[in-house]
Image (cartoon, rainbow over all chains, first blue to last red; front, side, top):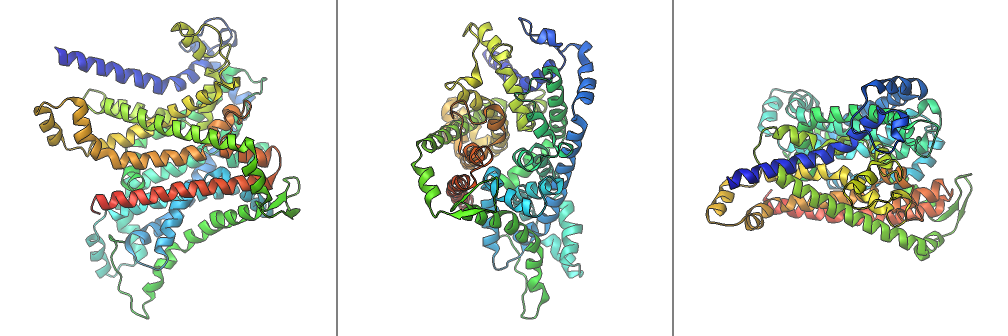
Length: 275
Length: 305
């Protein structure tokens, strides 16, 4: 009897934690579906008002929401593609080959993982201004990749470490080239980790704020993080519309993350956290 | 290196160059986008340079460092950075550990619960900042409604504009966002705890706390140590949530090092002093990195890898 009491108490505690974890995003949804009159009335509305779904249509018309999301998507996909392209072969080399400068590269990857974006924003601004990369989505992809690729390489290296070398040796005897081995044997074996690092790179691009805020001034090139932040302190956009934009930016990220989180946890713990 | 296969390298073997071909693009990328900007940052930090015309540079030696390090405002920045980092890390790891232990048992819907718990971690930081600004709103925010509903405080509190309350408010939002990551990492470390050992301890009549100390903690300790260092580094570099919520204010009470750097460069247009702050920040990040490197090497040795 005592035991079941403890069990139920524990379930209650789990529900409480889940409630706290989910509440702010839920509150975003509620606010986006509450009429302005009710938002500023005495007591808050705790459930969304289905009649207010029109807020989302208004958000599409009155804000450049689709442009922002489109630009964020381009940045996120570009960062993912470029990071993977740059990381796969070095990850393999770090795991399987011995060469001079290997320790230096490993150290470089470690250090660059630790550098704050904001600390490089001044010199990158200077460099980008000289190469016409300010006000360009390409520039943002390049900058974001610089911060995604170290962790991606590191995690992939960890995953390749976990593959027995015998599998490759058979292919090597058959005369398969190294690049061929990586593409046809190694990559399929680390597919879950590839998915994980792709998502990590994607989020780097989707969430990134400081470079986008600093490097982009052309309205048509603004990304969602910067667009959303521009509502702060600006009073002409109603709060329900602001929250509708916020949720439209948040929800795809959350859903995407929930779908693949199994792989991310496995990837992070196999390569990232344990080093 | 211990895991790698030694490739046969004879003098004329073209395969000798293969590793370099493999790493060359990445190495070039890191040089262009990390090493070169770092060098530029260092050079900038020894000049007086305005953002209005960055090509006009006046060499001032170490004056910027002297100005920054002698500035009481910068001492406050360092103090706030330290407070922010320590509370983020202890709060993030502590709460993460508690929630991980809470979730580490068998119940229906466990998978769903473990997925839902990661919502804060998956939400974009700028969106997190925005929703917390709204929840902290003095007149219409849900926070004050909850506090008055619980009978804690009836009067409306202006969280983000109050110098006493802005930092705790920003910390609360940050810890809300990062604790799921800690939980998930610690949960996966908990799977390494041997259930036989734990059961044997319980049969021997050990209470929960001693089981935790004797069996659980030694297994997850290396993971928690690395986690704490990761969170330290992330707290040092966090810009978006703080900038969007307070821009470092009110009265500089949330002005961490990266916020201060950004303000100097893009609000006061003073690139030289901003770069000096940046170099100081890089030094701090490097010290933390080497601690991380050293700890993970030690953890690897302990694990017999």
